[in-house]
Image (cartoon, rainbow, N blue to C red):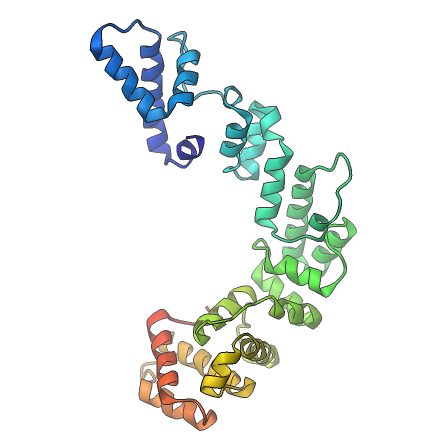
Length: 318
């Protein structure tokens, strides 16, 4: 019940509040006849038995209005409701319901939902450890990273949040969405060891090639211009895609070089089809003919499906 209330839009919440107030006002008056009984049964049916009796007990006087106090609910239900808040709203809730708002379970959930992997999660935490303090450190470290990537990673390591190992840094980046993608691109270009570990975290099994490439570039953003870094990314993706799809390799005769050619062709095709400056768009026949010159063993049907995917869905590196 608490989760359902909390997920309603503000206007529906207000409407439900007004119904609850009417319910409280009616519960404080003696009911006579079958009409009163039917109304009581209706409210019980709408709000469930436990919450209805809680509201009925609370509504002893008509002067009480507004939403029920979370401290009057069972602790598990109160914590479940507050778990839908972000850090700012949870701090404000802590000013009203101090015990609930400062619950370590809530702050632990906020940390792990925002920063999915940290080395400190795997350790045995000392007595008195505060996840609320950890959240503030993670937030400060992320802001530092978005200004200077090297200083940000150093901050995490200084606070004991991350271990100085490429695999741990790669997992932190992979499961975090608070890092600026431009700064992340600069950092990965400088730390190729972290980039290698980050590529290994991707699983492209049973994915169509353009969709796998989109997934790859969502985590590791492509540079704005062609160059050595883009070629490195495509090369690493090609080897990872082949490793994840051995059956596809046997069926289509794909190799890392063939996947590299196809990926580069898909990027150029997506630019060609999406750019407003290109008037004469590449046709499907032209794409098949150009790709066949570079990748001789790939069937025309497979290349045609690649063209259809870009034509219908769009850019692979947007």
